[in-house]
Length: 411
Image 1 (spheres, helix red, strand yellow):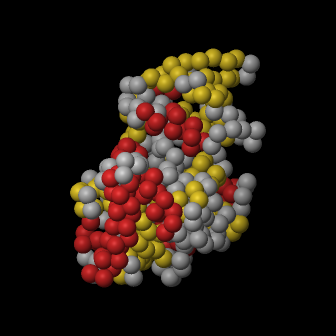
Image 2: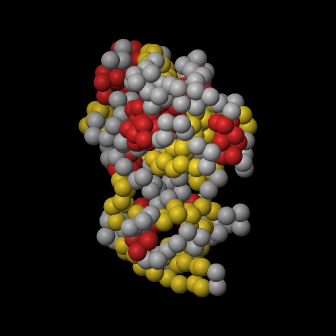
Image 3: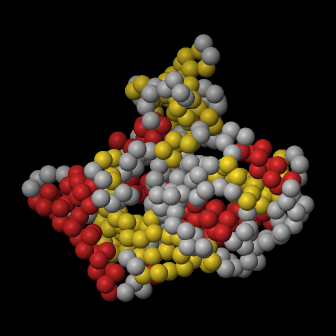
């Protein structure tokens, strides 16, 4: 989970560092593949439905961290210093500081600890701010290894090139993509290896039925549409949240206010890999009238997150989740479930409930180490456990959610 907004800085051992973080994403050309190390091996990314979700992490906001007691601050600082020292020694020996830091994090046994290049970290910040550089398409890997375009953003370079949902993506700049993880394909689309900026060209090989062709498009800076709302039959409004980027919490509250008064709400958090916890708390506030959303600890120092007052507490609500529901999205789910505000439908969530703190290394890369965990209002731990839905559902989850809503009256 992420407790800070873009632009806030913290002082690492080697100078100021912007704080917000989100790794793990859906299969759009939005984020490069994050580096993940735990127990000596790279963490296998989890694929959920048509979305590929990585590990969403979190960072502490500056004010919260400043209020931490001395012992907790010293413990956290000592762990970061160990990684920084390993990086500095490698740099002095003419070796890669980043690789040395990765080894140090891996040896620490920190499941969610990670090291990112300076460019990767900046990309995460941009994405949390609701903007990213890419061509504007979503993709998934089929069982046969083919990469299929599942959605094209209106007005994007991909749309302008005539690419449509259902097209097969065969290559990116001449590199075949069949059989690759979607995250690697995303990285190629973004041009992460060369730090490609908006305006740079990328050549895509595509296939539609029996037709195969290539097209060159130019990357552009795009904004995210993380919250969408639609009305379905039976007096139900579906509010889908892809991730908790800047402004998404307010967008959820607006969607709820604008939904017809007689409609129940399905809050669709499937495949939501987390984001800014401040936005997640605001989203939960759309359905709560104040009160506890979650507690979390930082090296043993306990904190609490509270909902804003004035939310809709009467409208029937179902939260729809799956194995790709992670981090801040699990925080929202746990709060609504524990407080009896929503019936949770779907499958067990991912189980990412830890808090990370970042610091900058001497070569400009960023190390993040786990410093605490959050719990639901009833005290349930999420990390490694996930949240068990009230009603299990898989392929027919949306239909099950609508059926549940039809049996719920005003609460």
